[in-house]
Structures are given as structure tokens and as C-alpha cells.
Image (cartoon, rainbow, N blue to C red; front, side, top):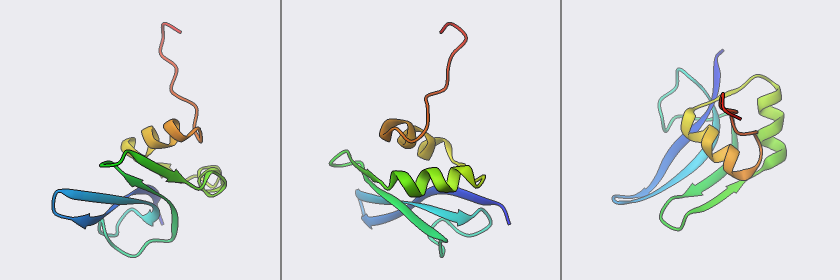
Amino acid sequence: MAVKMRLTRLGDKKAPFYRVVVIDSHKSRDGQYVDLVGTYDPIKDALNINVEKAKKWISCGVQPTETVKSLLVRSGVVEPKKTKGE
């Protein structure tokens, strides 16, 4: 089973709210997830990540999507990618 960490959308039209979830990659975007890691509200720019859960899942081999990876970097769970010039 290929497991990913990705966003699932909630909220109304033009008022999105997302959950950061661990889910089987073959399930639909809003399908049943394995674990809830955090939430993200882009309107209020509010990010709540359970750091311990996120680190545990990443250590187990879960691959975050690019968007979730940027949110994890912002919350301090993952180190930012180094560029060649640094």
C-alpha cells in the first residue's frame, strides 16, 4: 500500500479549509484517511500541525505532496531543501 500525506478539502465554495491527512494514494481526495495530522486554513493563514505525528509518519516512509511538504517546512517539521548556491 502506497501511503501519502496530502490535503483533503472541506469548507464552502470560495472558503476552503483543508485537513492534512495520511491516506492511501489510490483513494480519492476526500476518501477515508488513515490518520489526521493537522489542519490548514488559507483564508486566515492558520496552520496547525501535530509535529510528533508528522515526524512519526515521515520516519515510517510516508511521502508528502509538494504542497504539504511546503506546509511542513513552514511548521518546522522538515528541513528546507538546500539549493546548489548555499
